[in-house]
Image 1 (tube, rainbow, N blue to C red):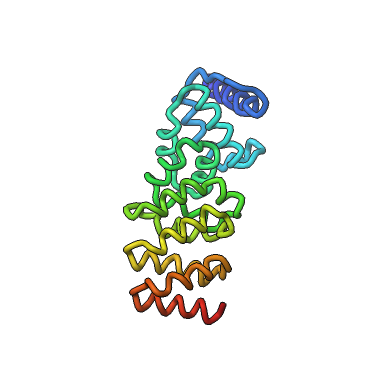
Image 2: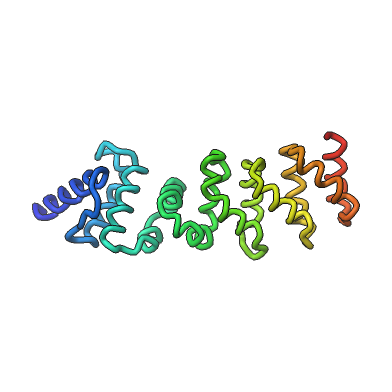
Length: 209
């Protein structure tokens, strides 16, 4: 027990040093993981830092010790804030996380435009993929940065997709956002749309333009 207390003290020291030092090594990574999970379950409040700051420090330490970050992600429970921290801190694994964990994108629904912009390229890739379970969610999330030229171009491209439901999702975004450039664009599209429901949405948009 005394040995455990001593090594836990080492972990605490390593954690706080990670805020101002680099390449910190841990003598017993498996036990460190056990300690981390215990502290996360207590929300790390007893350490005097937020859970998010705690997890950020842990991810840095694990990377310095060549621990598989994706494995660590898989071992955690699915609380949303943990997904947020992972996706912000580990850009190389953002797409892996979104593909592996369909719920990971949910936090972006309520994210600020600044945060969404960080994930723009990934969201555009998902929105273009008809086999991705989050295709429609990505389209909705991207509407929060609709002024971005890349997002506008994506919507224009998808308005000519063969799938009328996908086209409808874009039209509903335009109806909601009232983006002037895209409203002008669908005036051209109107003559080519062959779905009655979509035509009605287009007409509603133009009537209220």
